[in-house]
Length: 78
Image (cartoon, rainbow, N blue to C red):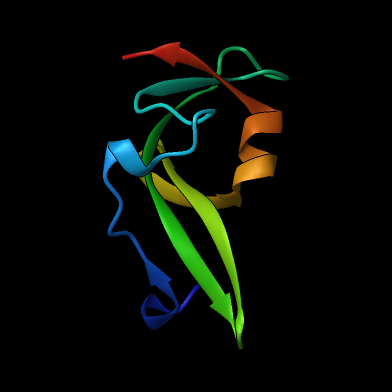
């Protein structure tokens, strides 16, 4: 679990990296699994900062690095 003080989600869609778009994403390994991108977050471990993707599936929230998210999911729209 990530303590709330260690992440931030003040991101506009215009601040998103070009590979990340708002909307739904499909799991490339399990096509029946669809998730919804929520926001970017910054996770800090000491002085090191990491940008992560926060996404939702079945009313639960998950956090992955941008690289992991893009390797596992592809954008399918709205």
